[in-house]
Length: 236
Image (tube, rainbow, N blue to C red; front, side, top):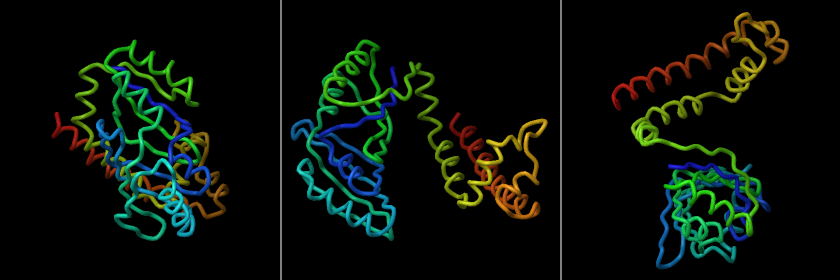
């Protein structure tokens, strides 16, 4: 199996057009293609920079000429859950015609979208990329040749991966920024390239304060990591 991660800029996609004009992002949680209607139905999370951006983005999406249906399922502050049906885009048609299939969720922001697409044969993947190049701007972010064992291992351990993702979501903005800075500055290296004093100066706080933030963030991530290890053991 050839697995491709593509950064796409389609010219006939209502989601991309909406993110160009409005400060919103879309993340697909479910998708289904109707070959008879040549239409893609999705359930999307829509996140706006604020409530106004969300409202404007939803309105623009609903009015887009490529949109067949857009139904609001729920909304809370700057996040909405919508069900949509759009006409088949050129890129969709090209991928389907070459026996390609979606292998993971896609995310759309700032005028481009990240696609995960699979092919059973390398020749089909190469032919699709060549065909896409005529009508779309895209770049191949990642390409991998997955064995059956790789795919099976991924499917069996999705739960563990989601546990780790939830751990990242548990972090506060301060915890995340502190951990990211500690890693990038070499605090966790041996020997260390940065000290607690360096991190404290970076964030203009005391050493006990930055140490507490690090421990709190590490505790959240390590707790989830241990849970993920249990999930892996159960799956295997």
